[in-house]
Length: 227
Image (tube, rainbow, N blue to C red; front, side, top):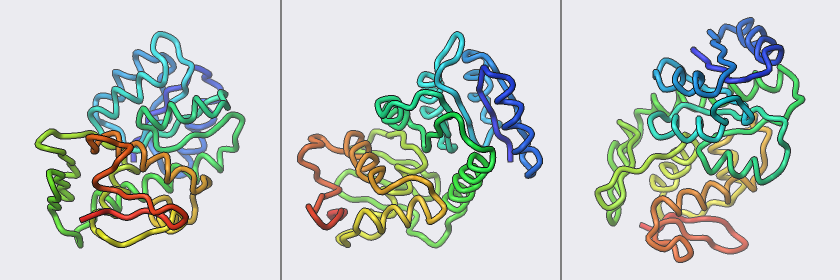
């Protein structure tokens, strides 16, 4: 599996590369934001690790550009610990956020988790290949989503969550169940990320996100996809 690290602190980048390399990953480093974006857009990578504060182009811009073309997992690694930076990173399409300093073992655990989930998602063959519900089309073979005829880009987690809910339409799921199902027991996040991702999905699908047609909130219970 090929991993791209875009990090201007070469000492940190080399440490990440060495640890991931010892565990069987092929790792490339770019220390410049513009060059990192260009390299990420080649399509040669299975996962991107990106810092936010970079010369010439920041991490938010890179995430946005990559997400417009690819569904690969994106992990933000940054010294910025503010909630607004984490939320903004997720809004732009990141799948995870690590705050410096962190242990190489923690980074490895998250890399493995995201890559394993991404591979399962891409290789899932026991699902209905096409789901069409009131103008929403989900193609589980090509992993494409269209709303009212217009294709919409989703992060891996957004797509995984939407597909799971649509495949189990009219079934109510708690946040805890969805977190365990989509993020997995090895995730180091919390159930609050479920609500964040639901909001992001609604913004992309709904004519009026405050009055959702597809994913309904059942207060005190969870969420349900209305078929």
